[in-house]
Image 1 (cartoon, one colour):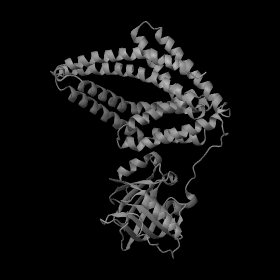
Image 2 (cartoon, one colour; image 1 turned 30 degrees about the horizontal axis):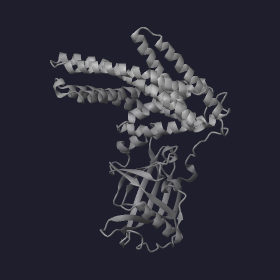
Image 3 (cartoon, one colour; image 1 turned 120 degrees about the horizontal axis):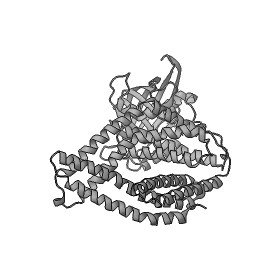
Length: 501
């Protein structure tokens, strides 16, 4: 699968438009002879145009040097990424491309929605070595919008000009833009041929009417960003990209924490099922993520040991054990992410930020509510700390400290949401609670690692290998846990000083 950044500008031009002289632009040695091409593209989407609504285009195009399936996705800089697959079956979207759009398609059928024919005259700007710096595509376009039965609904035609970087830089594109505008071209208002063909058929993004400056407006805006971030991780998890499972799991936890910390901003009863579904998805992702964490931790610890203390195939046993566990957990996660429960969760998240169920304090000033709720997160965490320190039984204390960690994490996420309103005050509190969370997280990771090391040691002995190194690492983990607890007091003192009053 080819993956390219598509950096181009589209201009509206009249049929009589003539390209200006571009041969004197920086870096350009030659303007090549124009080439004629005939392109035919079929665009597929859901019946309700979900891909177009999210500025994705998925097409199968014949003609030209890049015939095949193309998926274009928006980038943060305003341009697009383009993924390509060979032509293959005209009626079957390549699975490698489908996985990148499933977060929007959500199990629905993809079918042809528009056919576009293009008569293209392509002109290339070349450098002294003959490399193509930029392609200018002078296009006569005919678009046929298809009805639900696949028959032609409407047909439109227009003329446009595309300037796409190949091996050139942005300065060249800027210079070309200025020259074309001076010659009478107009920067297009449509992001793509598909968008122009569909016009107002594409659903407009829903935006809730919320009181400016209210906590409801502030929280929903922040939650919208979290929903977008979580959905952006979906194709990365499907592609097994590094850290994607972790980031998606964090997104689940962050939104659950916000819905809990800011009860009353959104109706608690209405969002309770969503909190549970976010918990479910976090647990689905947790199997794969936990395997990653323990594997990397134990491998790093084993690598630090002197060679004479590593008895037997220690690293191989760690890698094989957790690679198998990770693959099984990741496969299960992908199964769930192709299921109705997951798609329903995505729908519920969309509804949360487009038609939010506002609670009784949603219209109140954001600064007042944020400050009050952050103070509450501190009191809740402080109560749990007192209960943990009062425990005499070591196992009970460890359990209670785990609850402190979860509470500190909720406080941290709540503070991050409030930072745009409360500024440095919320930042300092969130940073202090993050430190508490991380110290106790180190302790909890050590608890989990010790259990895994015991299991690995027993398995090694059963296979006739030495369990010595795993026992040694177990002792190291006991020391790390004790060190983490020793740092907890200092972290909690700083959190007390940074608390919101």
